[in-house]
Image (cartoon, rainbow, N blue to C red):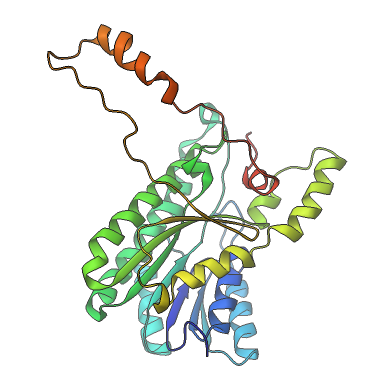
Length: 310
């Protein structure tokens, strides 16, 4: 018996990295799995291949599970609607979506092309919209559904060289929160996960010296993709039906619950503020509560997630 017995799960980006482990672990926990992966490169924009998704589906079937594959892109709403139809027809239902599909096109903002901005937003934020929009009415009608969206500390905390990626990932956190709020009455849950894992994305960070190479070897063992994948699968389980609207992190064997933006200071001036008094009084009083530009001092695992600034 597994925690996902009787469930059907769609996993995007399921041919590699965290998505692959999400698919394999979901199947091990009893789910029927639709493995979706465009099969493209890390930067996107290429034609892709059906190979990675089908390879994972074959691995699940070889282990005695039920899985099918799909190589369409999450950037197309029609394509995702086709995935839903495929799951309903060939697997008999759909109960959860795990959506780690993504690309990177890093660069300093003053050098970023419109194409690199648009492509990252399209895959991450529009892709998250597409998988949610294509499934939300089905989930509401059956009074059962779970989303695991993928956010990132690049958005939650910030990361130099990733304005496109960070903006998309912060948008996903907001999308997830509101879907959870709107879906509560119909037992539709949504959570966001900011993972740290040794995948193609983290491997794209250049190695500058022998010390960095040694750290990489250690990271590969300590921050594996199966660790955030396990959390993703747990969030889809009926036993976690009261967990919704949250932002989680996973780094190695650490499971993190993130705070969400709430007011930390409110100042009132009955006679009204002027630009001058805002500066001299409000900003001055709030100054010690301003967040610094620097990220919190990262652990080795968190540092691995930081992609290069070019």
